[in-house]
Image 1 (cartoon, rainbow, N blue to C red):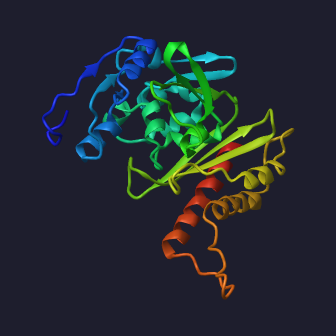
Image 2 (tube, rainbow, N blue to C red; image 1 turned 90 degrees about the horizontal axis):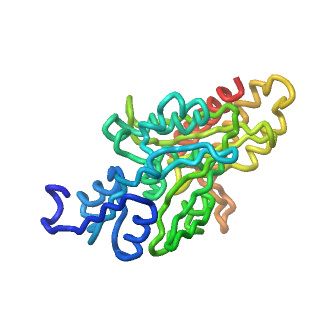
Length: 298
């Protein structure tokens, strides 16, 4: 598997269908499913993971594509980031396509998958804040043809877990047919891990503005009060505009909600100042939220 890994052979199962993959996992509870392997192999090479068996998903064709279904896009867990960045995908889910394109260099985009991004749950996963803002659901496949759906946020925060023998099969994403944006800040020029990221999606049918902030916490953060406030100011029946000063206030509202001031000291009542690093991060989040909403409304 790697020049850094112990030279011990791991049994590898290569199922051809989703049900075969689930059966293989049920038969080998300690087995690890693998598709692109960009996160898995990093963990193996770093000595953080030593799988006793692998279930390869590369031959499961039904997990590598996407389709329309009941006003949603059903995205296979093995859909690559490169495929998600293509124009036909970007027309319907522009923020998700932008997040996929920004996830790394070509070798990562060609191998990395949507399901891997979700299951690894890395705070810097670029697709995660977009899925949170779009309020996507995950379709979990279990033994004996069992299927269940859970909100993506429930899985990320640990309210839901994959049970033995279960496999993430699809992400079910609502098609809002409205502007969406994804912006991120990195520590260097070009593709890189996000220091902060913001996804903004408009939902004209419900007259909602949805926003999720990634990379600054273990899971994407939804500033719900900021969303409701700015949605009340949008001219939904007209040009979908807000006053320029409202954009600035929205950015600051989002940043304060996600990076609040410290709690007052119980003894003295004094509030400690944020560190320079957190102040800079707060300004970064405010700028991303302001620009993301501005682009969506324009």
